[in-house]
Image (cartoon, rainbow, N blue to C red; front, side):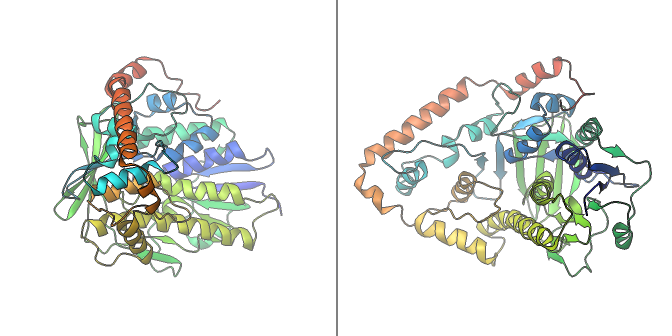
Length: 439
């Protein structure tokens, strides 16, 4: 069986993204058809991405400057956390920091950090400093190493135009909502991105705590360069800045909820993706990262001759592992904040290994880098019991010189970088080719 037609179900951003990526990636013999979903709610008014999401924009031949102009966006250098720890801290997106005498920067930092001779980990990262100060470098077409903040409605419209531009077809009829109807749909493969009721009775659904996020608009966000998470009693609020205004979403930490993910996301010819496959809190990770996990797994596995059991099993393994790692990122924060006495075994191992020897444990399908993990541990005041024994042969002055030089270089680059508001003002004065996303 060949795949001649793929139906993408949903009226949300995930469906538009999936249709655009498939239309761009598939051969001319395969048609992507976007089925809108009647009465689709706008689940959140603002979107956040990680730097890895830029891979999809590159696949779609998007220039990030066009995306920002058309979608009211800002560049994201990292995340600021307030009142989750005893101090405010920032995680910047990872960059390769210099090594010295055969040892990584983070081992030199740990050595001096234990003796209180080093500053916060984020102080040595340019992206973190840019995020804290509201600065951002001049824009390039790909803008590697940074995430984005985007207006949900504008970005969804932008992706729909891209899908049509690359050859996808949009139907006027609404999507079916019954699971049996999906299997009988006139398509060789059905990608379900819908916002339907969570399948809590589905034996494949793995539930985790969560609660709905309530959003409100703010007129003037304080910092366009960072996503901000702020503890407010038993609630956590996420602040997402946009080019004009911004949004704040809040949810309850203690709610039992019905978040989670499907451990059987590919049944028959129906593939679950986005909110149909996984729903997590913003602290775990951006919803566009959830969609990205599914899309990239599907692109690697989509066979020319039709889906088989091997493809279904591998899709389930890769996606559920990715969703689990996102959820564990939230567990890591809550465990270090004293809100989760019994985190998962893997999160316990991460914490124990860092406390013991300063080792950053990463598992397969992680969404966050070693540098981001380091910033989290440091932000919550975790100091390892020891560092690499091999460093004992290196004079302490070498470690001090390395950190001092990195700090000077970071502060010099920071001083040469304009405020993002100034960069955005220049960007939005230029005409945007909104009618031609892609090339």
